[in-house]
Image 1 (tube, one colour):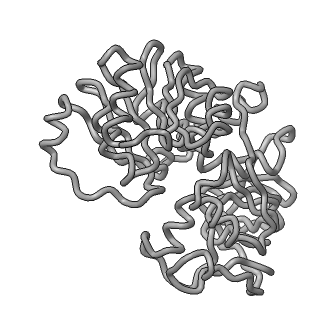
Image 2 (cartoon, helix red, strand yellow; image 1 turned 45 degrees about the vertical axis):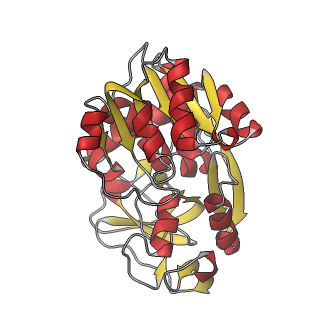
Length: 327
């Protein structure tokens, strides 16, 4: 089969399309022919060496496709079933092994592209608004990168729960997308002279000086200080990504000075640790898609061979919604 290999830690240029042996499923796995693979920032962290992984390795962890072989211990899936997943290493490939326990059964009326776009970012948005900081009606919420894959879903879910969403974006086009997803107010961060000072000032001017109940920050280093200064007393800063780089160590006294705020760094694995929790979150997301209340935007698709270009676009913040590779 063909697969995208990261040959060493580095930039997108280390990604190479390579012929590798077809995988075979372990007893608790299924083998899936990939219809679409999700491109995510975590893939770039692993490729660049920010996260420790072995090299060379087949890149990617998310996708959707059709089961072509089942392991001897698999009981709930059969050849021909359509599944999606968020955590199967080696998903930038024509075939991938997925643990039965990690599969999401795709409804017949959900396309392969939507199914591949939803697992990682959709499950993330879901746990952020339901578990990390359960959003309720009347709260003020700040969502960074609101026109990105998680951002658009997060904005929709938070606004549907009755929150007022303040979104940050980088362009007029992204502002339009954020507003269409339910953002009540939008701040274009590129128009601010001093992000660290001007963003909190803008947020507090929109909230009568109070600040927001929660900041959902996937950007990291560039926005962290501004995010912390935007949180209301006893509010929460949720740092769930680092697209601009990791945040330096934080003195806990800064949380005291900011108003007894809470800081958390959640991960998807801890919010889908059981099969029941995984299926609950996925079912709510798929049901919302089928009902037309959740729009999953696929912003760009690339051939598998052009994975490096997909990474360049993602890291260059030139994308909106989800980026997919099509084998």
